Length: 502
Ligand code: ADP
Image 1 (cartoon, rainbow, N blue to C red):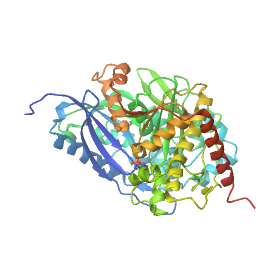
Image 2 (cartoon, rainbow, N blue to C red):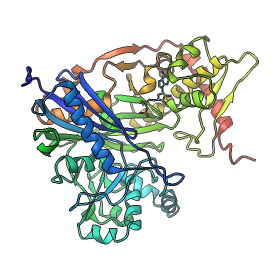
Image 3 (cartoon, rainbow, N blue to C red):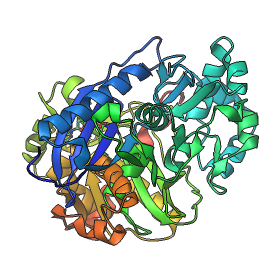
Image 4 (cartoon, helix red, strand yellow):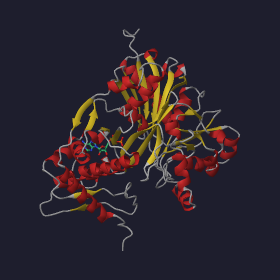
């Protein structure tokens, strides 16, 4: 018998590179973590696949491992929440539970040509108005179409109701409930190009446009609601599955950005910025995405989302491309060894530039080099570039949302870098705050599940649990900030259209 009857929430965090399971206490602290890597398959250039069965087995293994290692019985788990890599697409046989194909991962570009046709046909604005998304191979709808077009007999079987489509949340919910629940939540549905974010339902016209039979779709459930019990065979007790949200939305919830105007930035490989905009979708005039954050108790929260392709990846490039550092955590000391950037700007347009430039033909550049330039200046310029790009997106969000940011909450691997966060605060002119629990994605899934079963009472209780580990106050005079920004923009200007200019 376990000495304590303390209860926990179990979050299953299924990311692009690993499956993780984290147990959270009522105080929102971590009791245990287990993690397992996922194999990446690259069958052709631009294609990325995962084995859906491997994902399920890894997720089950880490769930069991975290309970075992933490000496927590399944009966002590009040609820399970799922958070997942978004847009990754699975198609499986409802009777056998077998996937018909490897999952097509969000990064996969195989449907880019089809998306271009849609754009050339003038459909982009129509999609944007209904879905809040830009037409891009990133989202699940065209990946599902590809599976139905390319697997023999798949569309006919889908029409007869024999097949199930789902993003990773649906797939895991199906497996966990022993095939009883074929569901998804609005935060995931809103990333498919098949879902109308205003009516909050699958859309017949979108389905017709992409030639998707409705019978293949999961049932929509709230992000915070009991969907069913997990089969007792898996963890040893029938625990309620009570929360589902895509990873970035879950992280926003975990950061308790629960009021309009609150925002978070995750500094991972890329940066993901999300701002709470209230209960009405806010259209972006700058090609940012309008998406659903979460739905609970009949209320839907909308977010604006923007991303920076080269976030922490800029630091990886310093390490692997330039050999300037041996590991990412060395960049801070190197950058801090000089008082400023010495006039050096690194524009990380290695893969083109997203918002607000939207220039796939831009390429990266180092500008302002002089005889006095050292590796330390370049390291500093690289960190500053991450902050400049994030700042540009946040300014667009403020314009779209018609309000001003009061503080920025941060997480992700590069958020451990104090120099980066101080510069970010200086540039934005608002405090940047790093929480004690930086596993915000899993925490958000736990919060959504815990609210649904009364483990936590309400959002106010969650907001009170959120604790700052360190707060970076802006200290830079406004003129200096403006001058740096002007130089940054001049530097960006030199890189635009690089591949096409004569
Ligand atoms: P992901 O979830 O995208 O894999 P993580 O949140 O694990 O990313 O963050 C990893 C990224 O953070 C890498 O790109 C790495 O270069 C960067 N990174 C890690 N530590 C630091 C650091 N101390 N300073 C700057 N960047 C860092």
